[in-house]
Image (cartoon, rainbow, N blue to C red; front, side, top):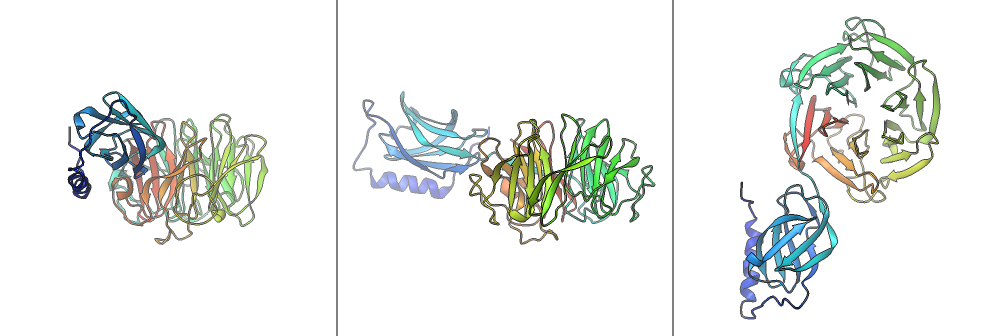
Length: 426
């Protein structure tokens, strides 16, 4: 097992502090309570150094155990009023407990654990081109703020505005063309005859069937497993969502005074169910049928209750930025798409600026925990670029589409990098 590397500065501070207080001496009093006053930092991931302040500690580290959310942490050193620990992997959010030979104290504050994520390139060479192939041998031309979806078998579906096609990516990373001949137009039919103006978003409905929005053609199209297309209806559909309980479709019209519509794909009938939103760009449906709408123009994510469409929680203060925290104070910067995982947690793709601007502060995927609505950064950060790696070291350039596989793996449309990225959380 690898040893955890601690910062030299933290250890020097600890040693210096111990030296200054050496003459005073201190011993743990088993009859007096152990006290935790505070700790810093309050959030972080595995390996982060945390300094615990308190009293009635002991200089004998062999008698000290510390847990974070019940998970044992590595104790690096102790002085009279502080203990230095390293946050253990997979600790989760919870209180810090210090145990000195059975004399225990628990913090009043919880440590906010941030899971580490590992980002890799699943498919795409980075070249703006059209090439089918395996993994990084394939090339994409995403071209716009396009979405992504996954079926129960782990196949990904990616609409490409630039190539005017819908691509399919098998679980082994093999990229093929599902439908579209690349010509700019509107035409239904077999895969190599079908034409699109701007295939934009996609939802997988099962049995190899997917639905694709083409807002430039004002259509929602049905695509079968062999790539044959047919018209569902004439709609100004941008972001698509699907209720997997009954197969109903939902779409956003991305207008200044925008709306959300419900569509029955069996007969193409539709109804407007939510109005008065500022550029609604995407919609996702959770296991209960509640809707989560990305309101791009308001920098918020809005919840609407199943069937009644009554407004629920609003996530985001409305001000632009990259700020994590409670729903009311968190900030997004022109968010674009949203996905729901098996536990109804939300993932939001950050940069919904029209041109994928590098100055947008959300070159990342945000995570919203269901129920508490606490917002955190799942992977990436505020800097645009391209880099595979861990956590905030991974770089994206205008992530616009996001989906969560049944096994919890997250896939991202990295628009400006013309790649599909894979994110595995610990």
